[in-house]
Image (tube, rainbow, N blue to C red):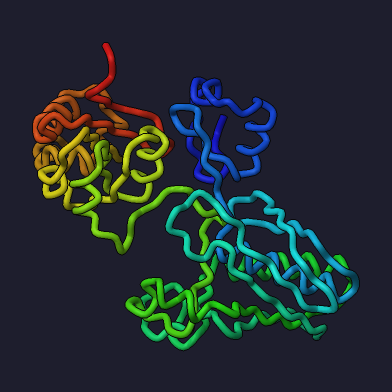
Length: 338
């Protein structure tokens, strides 16, 4: 099977290890809501702030003509998200679903939307949605912190509702009564978003793994009996799936530093361009290749790759080294049984 959200391959043996009935599991995977790990255990995704705002917006529009308690909306990855909602007379409340992402502080928040019939579709932001105060973010300075993908998601869903109830257009205002309060517990003020939370989401789904942003990673590494050090978001995803009983820590460029702090069982997992170049920074020198990705594609079993992997294993000081590609396939594993 293929995970429809992150497009990773799900090995049959992972599915077979799960205790959830096969039909139920496959339905959950196809909906985008369930993630299967290597031991057969399952984590639940949630919906992003973008998807939740979209649900509230569409429900508010539909409720101009009828009471609404459940809606289906599009997501950026092409799946439909379905949520319960309370909506009547142009006012809707959608509650952000709980999920298995431990540090998602927006779980359970109320997202409100108010709709008024108009000549065209227009989306505005009210209380609890932050305003961008610096340049360099996806939303422009001085505008509400609603990123382009979720804004398009909202507009698409509102357009569906406008067509369904047969009106020309609508004005929709989105708000979060507790948005400003919750924003104080985020990094928004540091990056240039003030007065509320951001409406985000590149896929429409919240992944169920913790990136430990804002936490003392050195303490996590030192105290964990089993830890995986990884280098990026893709690394977090596959490290969590491959090592469900480990603490996964986004080490970035600090692998060596964190490796020296570990006291328990250690794995280092991630993409070849990050993991192998950590182990052998000069692996491209005189190789004729411009990137590690090119080298892997052309000579996956070549001497340059083998030498870089051997140096990475040596530098890992006994840590298990696992190199994966972007769809989750394990390319190299120093702990693989021969």
